[in-house]
Image (tube, rainbow, N blue to C red; front, side, top):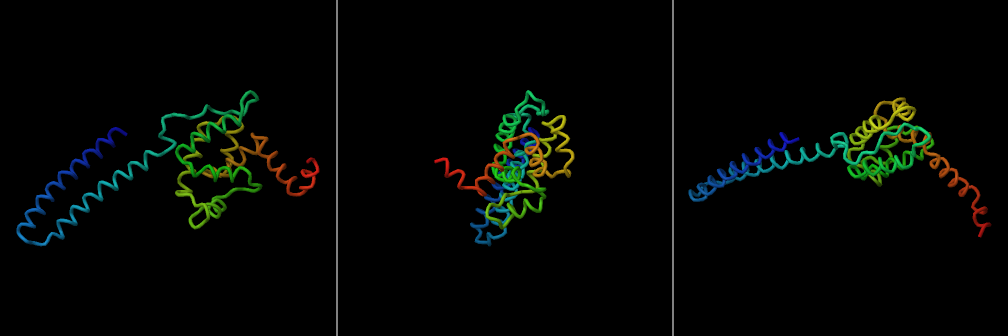
Length: 203
């Protein structure tokens, strides 16, 4: 990372040097009454190259894998003395601090009744939908890697036994197995839909 920053700093300084030289050329051209089009274009190109390099570096640093463990939850093994809900909340805080838009996708995935494929995720959150998520295929692959690093025992095997990289389906299966509230919440909603009079009769 430090080498990358040093390289970008060097690129920035080189760009500034080129800009200074181009400015001097522009002044000379203006004084001579010649066309300044080519020199102006060269200056704009130089600035664009540096801006794009900085953007690429910023995008690379926004990864879950390169976070050096800051804010990561402990590993979850599924043992009786461990709270899946507590671990899930801590994991969510970690993931959503990097990729807040994934919260709605993972929340949607965990209550689905059938296999969550990438096609279904695209249909719900891809480009052109009501709530599109940028890099819908790139970001989940990082979450999949985090799950593999933070799970052991049966929870780990749940993730490993899903198709590689299918983090939304892994998340759905993990919640169905380890979080009783997921099923209970769905059952409560179903009862409310099918028998609303039971709720009204208690009032």
